[in-house]
Image 1 (cartoon, chains in turn yellow, orange):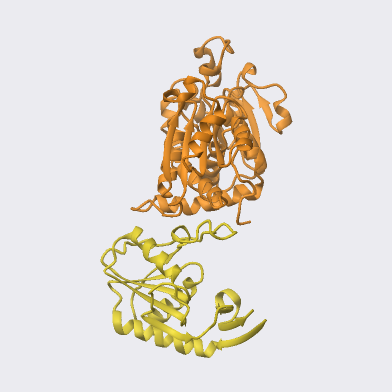
Image 2 (cartoon, helix red, strand yellow):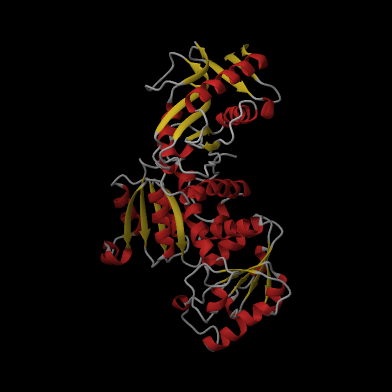
Length: 179
Length: 308
């Protein structure tokens, strides 16, 4: 097994600032925008961006939620393991709002498809955008592309992208792991 | 810990502590789902479930059906009173006929103890026991414990008294097993004639004085007197039963502390429990019903994910 650093802590910092600015450019005061981190790993990125936008870029208030897609997945009963759920926390309606899904890695696109179904339980959004830190090119099963991407990666099958966060794993770093 | 140790839910007897924790954690997620404006998830859209009821039921049947529908399963209902069972068909034949219509899971209530276990050995589907005679009613016990956990934070260490007709009650047996498994202290209270011999071997204590039992407990689970299962008289009159084992407001207010009142339904108002108690703030009877759907969704979801 070989492990290569894709993004260092410093590079992640720079990318987070860029993504925050890009969001700011399209959503200005975030009055009609809600950010939704996808469970389990997208919530860290969503929280980081929210903190950055409110603390460094003067946005007053951002609606932040987390969405669990377990019960909407298309691979129920297809794996060996029972799919374990995480918590959904959305205490607002997404009706007529601009929704931004936030996830750490975009791979096959199936999680995003599930999220598109799941979010309908909370209303009919005006539009939905997608932000991912890592976009794995050439590995999509569905016609889904991000609106905001941190870094595009050409990873082959068998390789794995692992995103670690300071608040959870003790450091910000992204690895490309070859098993 | 992410999957159940069993393929069927035949009784609490076959579960371990991890299974119960997993069911409760999953039920937490489903409770959030059923409180949304759109209460449905598509998980089980390719699963078909048969509700096979050989005995009457309102709450359990509705609760199971709702749980199945909220998981997007296809549901067929069968009650013995309108079926070929009356024409002499055997249990295995009836269920195998249903299964040949490509059914993945069977929820069954049956008047005979062990019917679920028997069926699980002879048919190829996941079986959920929705009550088998005076034996077990596992989902009721799970939702009762879930409701205690929700109200009091945890089940372990709590004092629970089960009052009433213990002898004919499947709710009592499943509850005792579930509560003991989670580390609660359990007492049963009722007329001596309605308490099975050797019940102490399950690790419970017996009390015949209701006031003493209520003063000891954090939670009182009131059971109905099951007249339909009684072929002889177990106590002189209903009035005498109520005087000795019925809970009323005056009795509750004279206790040292405020206790939680539960009832699995159907309630005989004015017999085991008065209306003002059933409708009071201390009662979590309607929470039990709400939690029933979430807990049954969890059980069905976890068992369905093991169907291959």
